Image (cartoon, rainbow, N blue to C red; front, top):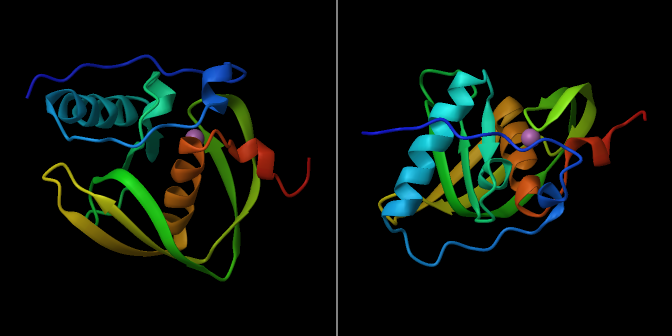
Length: 152
Ligand code: CO
């Protein structure tokens, strides 16, 4: 693999407010994007990254919450199929420097997404993985965690 770090776009860049488009075909540039996004996330000690954060308006997400049993998750065109309960956790974002805050998210999510092989995978997420998925999928619709702070 030949990976490369990409620049992370920071708020208030208007690109972060745009809605990302679905991936129509998983071609080489999407595979390269996934590889670069993972490398960029790890290099910046992040737990998730959406393609818009590296300037690409496509519905692509990488997540690694540091649980070895889960490992790296790659989501192409993720869709939240079910959402239940709620939890409040402190969040930050690689695109929002110097800010953290409490955000209310679903306690449990069922998400369907394609992997890089084009297979539709169903994820049942709870705890911090549900937080990360909700946060990253929000990015695909131009939503930042700062829009959802419990106390502003
Ligand atoms: Co973020």
